[in-house]
Length: 326
Image (tube, rainbow, N blue to C red):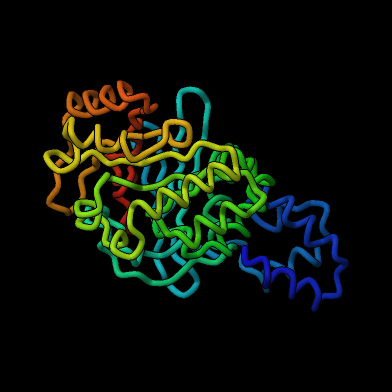
């Protein structure tokens, strides 16, 4: 819900300050509406129903994948589209993939979101309402800001949402923020006290290729981005994840694996290799054999590397596929 509107409404109704905390506690525990908040006076529940929409987002469509992944297409009050995803794993994890913007202004060439028209930053309440939508379906315990948008371009709202995520069930240590390398945001995140993990979308270990794939590299070159990430590691004492989408014939050779190993510090970085998920871009995904060979080459050079388990590909909910289409 719009937490600012809630606070103003409670003040106008002459309610005590603790009502705000009381209502948030109910929402964070998965309440479906004000009617479920049985320790609120009946008259107050009615007044809130009339004045405060229970969610700042409207569900337009929900898709369910064969692997249990759920993708929600949502709209803001002013009609801006966004998507959020719930991923479930065999070990019991229930992880949220949250969006920070409607669309994305950074136009990475392999990403469906980057081909959308950018609308605007989302508010902290709109980010939280993505999490609350899935919390109403059951418990959640992890969150990644790897949905639509560049989170570090909207860091005030993202951090304001992160402050409240533990109330929903997601600790700060189980929260990760992904960036394409927005250095001012990396520096601010390093200074923040919350122990949130940083993930860097890298995808190429040389500036020329990275600029082709990710135009942001012209503004913040790779060496400067990696230096900011190392500083983040030194201040937070948490490994930085390198996200590396595997594109056949583009960035998946042995030489490029060695090049990647040369530019990252094994004490500060761990690599997560991402199978490419089909979009309208001209790229093809690397074969499983090529991905495994790339991983082995990184390991041979002392770099820890894993291969991401793809979730939700059949409903266009996997990494790089979010495009706000039903």
